[in-house]
Image (cartoon, rainbow, N blue to C red; front, side, top):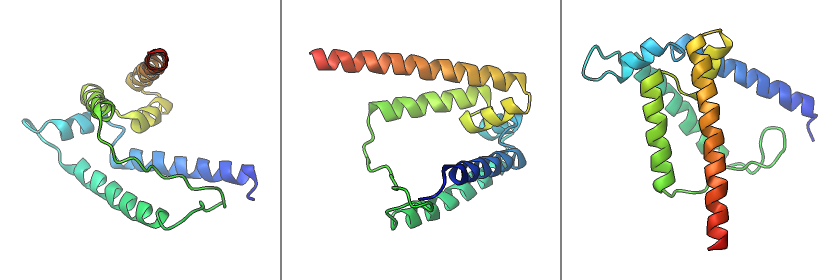
Length: 149
């Protein structure tokens, strides 16, 4: 079994690499993101290359992971198995897209930008956390209602 501090160090390094990639690619610049989303105006296609690269990396990473039963440190590997496209997934994707379009941030770049001292990113992350908390409260209430019905 791998020592927990080694696992935490690897998590830190991967997070640092991810955050650096977001910074270098321009994903932490709301203006660049909004330019990418502005299909009817001055469209900036550069982030399409970033997304294409991320999809390619993810495709090969998941293809390799599907052949494994343990992670690199020997722990159990849990991959998603659901292929359902339901109302919750569609609504969540819609809310994610609207938030990205309004703010120019999605969660990862928002956190990196907040750490870099951008006030708009701090507001984005705080409202994201409030939204997550409200969803948890709603979800618990809905589950209790289903159990008593």
